[in-house]
Length: 437
Ligand SMILES: Cc1cc2nc3c(=O)[nH]c(=O)nc-3n(C[C@H](O)[C@H](O)[C@H](O)COP(=O)(O)OP(=O)(O)OC[C@H]3O[C@@H](n4cnc5c(N)ncnc54)[C@H](O)[C@@H]3O)c2cc1C
Image (cartoon, rainbow, N blue to C red; front, side):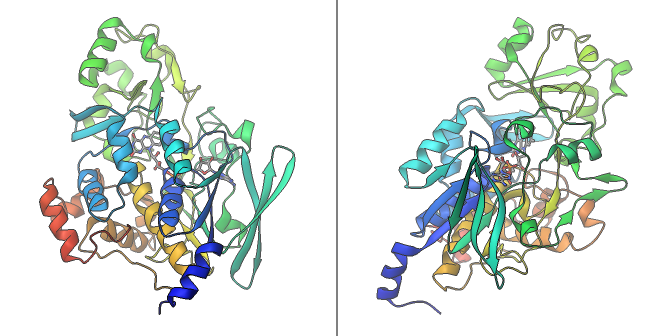
């Protein structure tokens, strides 16, 4: 049931959306809500946007190509355009992953920040949300700290995009300790979940005895590698170096968050990708062992600083939600990115962020929430992951368009395509062309 034109024009002045957490999920939610006419405030506890997207970079591999093109056809493609434009390498292949792009992690953040500011989004950095004010299933305001100053942000709709990484207590309890990753919890304070502060009972990813999952890659300073490796990385984007068999036993790929790279090739080889730094596709690798490998004698970790010992723990604290991404038990709270479930990746976070921001604005306008159709990979993934998370077995897996269980499903169900025109037609048949415009 929609509102009259007069009511809508009144709402345009007062429609306030707060997005907490400025990873890719929060950035996408902010942009999407702003495009629907909301006044958007994006709150981030660190001094930079992009969260774990500050150290990732892989886009468009396997089914992520299809998901990206679906989003472009739905007019939700701006952030993908930015990553495409800022890619160091396009259409490259590394084991199991054809037609990938690698964005430059060193320069991505300021580009996104400028883009959001130009669209009128207010950004509060170094501001950590610590609590909520709520009444009868609705959040009225979030409260927190900017330095020593107490801050309060009232709004009509909220998006929880606080991710699932950290705080350090989780990395200590379920991993190998705080490894000083890009999220810099000891400096800015650990993650605080909005949904949990509302009393929502969150999901915990668990496989066997492992709670959560360890981030699956780390970064080496490119300049700490041999000239030959640097040249190949710069030229081709990829270097594959066989690992001496005596060192292979130290690699544990089963704890990886990104199961799409837990393939035999990643066990036998060091796979390095050029994302500005050299992205090493294992969760961690003892530094002394790494330095035994020819060309890596002087290797040094850029992220996490203690990448020789471990990596951050993620996928603890996901919100129960419906397929519109509304958090169950709350009226005006939506969730995006990893907070919305076991979907791994920047592409995946941008997809759910775009839908969450869109529906937060629609909720304020009293419009029916959008549920993406399952004839599209993006709609199917959101529904599939929700259903899978209802079982213990499903909570042990991770899902991504780029590999593993969900990519297999995409292929089986005819949802995978590399033909842009075909994808556009599918979006059109679903009545979704330009829906996010
Ligand atoms: C090392 C590493 C490498 C990766 N590489 C890739 C890759 O190459 N390609 C790919 O597709 N995916 C990659 N991923 C996965 C991908 O980064 C994530 O799945 C996705 O970007 C998650 O986005 P998000 O917005 O949900 O969460 P996050 O990126 O975790 O962002 C959440 C944000 O919320 C903020 N926050 C938390 N609590 C609060 C609070 N209370 N107040 C204010 N702010 C708060 C955090 O500071 C953070 O910035 C990688 C992940 C890691 C860790």
